[in-house]
Image 1 (cartoon, rainbow, N blue to C red):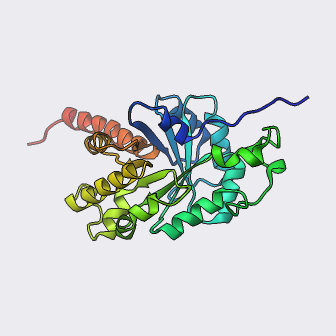
Image 2 (image 1 turned 180 degrees about the horizontal axis):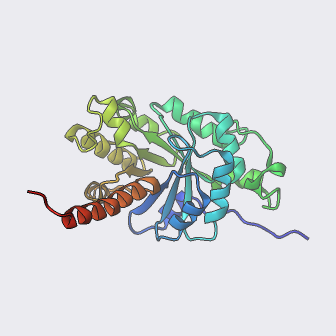
Image 3 (image 1 turned 90 degrees about the vertical axis):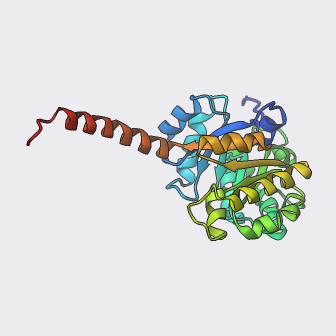
Length: 269
């Protein structure tokens, strides 16, 4: 007799029970080992990114398996708001999605439809073949699946900010995740995530989500900005990335030895 299996919690479950903003770290290395290290670090959620990273379906699957025994919520971002790709990630067992580049209510509705089975959506039915249903070991998965999935859509363009009230009002959208980097680029101040206009757009989006009773997240690798957005009501914040942390730490280590070597070098006059 097979084991009875129940779905894991998704991001909306963690947010519902949280009494503080949830801090998360990006996992961009496509390494299950690094994902597991990050999962045990004490973060509330992991952002497994497949848009700007070499992650693919098999890498994401391996990372989901690697982090499952840790008290952390894995969240996956596909490369594009595409129903075929989203279906594949859902069938892998992804239960929390951040859908990139959603600029209006129609695109938000398309993201929701891709995550839901008919008649509400267009997700293809393949539960007998899929890890999401644990190969039909989760009782009544097909009728329960929609409730186990968190759908966050990404606000990362000036157009999206202008349409944010309509986006957060879209049925099935659980919340938003704001990307200040792309937002700054779309506003003509690329690389200036702390520009006053960008910050104002982020705060407008957070307030719109909260007013609609939806969750608001934001990316902020700068700790000062992260804490300010938490204080402003952001429910979950991405505060760093595995590859960025490794890059900066190795640079600092190399620089410390380089400086030491220079200080000990004989002086020529």
